[in-house]
Amino acid sequence: MKIIIVGASGTMGKHLISAFEKDHEIIKVNTTGGDIPTDITSTASIENMYKKAGPFDALICTAGPTYVGPWKNMKDAEFRKGIDGKLMGQINLVLIGQYYIKPKGSFTLISGALTSDPQLNFANASAANGAVEAFVRAAAIELDNGIRINAVSPSVIENSPQYFSFFPGEIPVTMRQLEYGFRKSVFGANTGQIIKP
Amino acid sequence: MKIIIVGASGTMGKHLISAFEKDHEIIKVNTTGGDIPTDITSTASIENMYKKAGPFDALICTAGPTYVGPWKNMKDAEFRKGIDGKLMGQINLVLIGQYYIKPKGSFTLISGALTSDPQLNFANASAANGAVEAFVRAAAIELDNGIRINAVSPSVIENSPQYFSFFPGEIPVTMRQLEYGFRKSVFGANTGQIIKP
Image 1: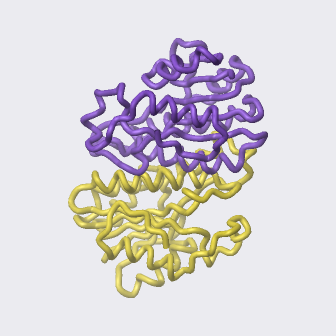
Image 2: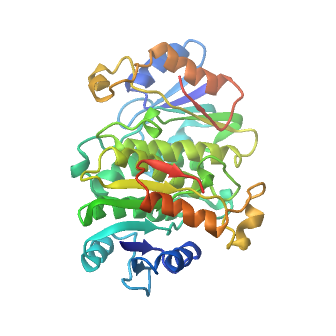
Image 3: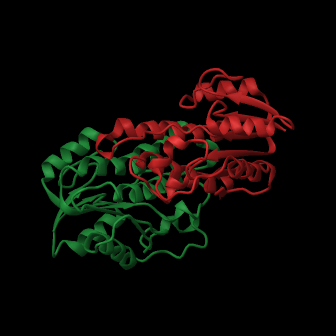
């Protein structure tokens, strides 16, 4: 398979590349560096990325910029970080990418447990996740040509211990669990699902 | 109680006004007309509305502009209608309104069944609803001074028969059920709840 991984330089992206690159062609996409530097907050940059990548079988997005910080400091401008990033960034990857992906291809987006289990300082991520998950269910009944779409919705990640103290009560998701969540979406046949690894 | 109703001229708003105005002081807010004309896509307009309204006990929002139409016509610009309207419009009503509302006051936002039960042509509303519902859960653990927040999440509304054909399989919510959903949020003690009337 030819798989585009957006967020290739992140904790999740690096793990997925090492897991998938033996058997698949991976196109690494980051804001800077990687195979095709791309700013997912720009529709022109996304369009350019797909043109350079050519037809592909699967897109995985693990990139989701949001505002993390005290509630009292959060105004419209801060909230737009997650709106333009994790929310519209990922939705535009689908709205544009549907015209470049191969028939029966798949999109796998990233959401997170904050959709239903909020934590202090993360209201922006909660809202972005909730939008992404509802969008996935809606897009699944709209996409043509057998194109599938799912989201992987992890809690805090084993390899990101700097976040553990912000997620009291959340058992960290192992990298293997996370990887298998993405495997279920990319190599399975489900669509419109929120996969909780 | 002093209750601000945003979307006062809509189907839901008019019903709630007729139900609540005997026992409560209602401040009617619409884009044009009403007591305080307000554009919820503008933070300056929201700020101005709260300054004119003065301290209040409850805010109800029934206004949620979104893009409704064929998936194939939906690009970033169309999707922003629901992002700037139903999503950020309502979130800014809370982020700004928390500094004007009385202690133990409440915010009641509008989401909808499309969060979990998508229908063709309504992906933008699904995403906005999903964001609003996750935001409500997150805001509930952040708001100070006993301020509560909930969302009412109806399916298609009895008094909006023009939408019935777009919602196959959805039993229309009666105006009484809808009213009692808002009653539960405004006059009850719940917070962080998605109320399905």
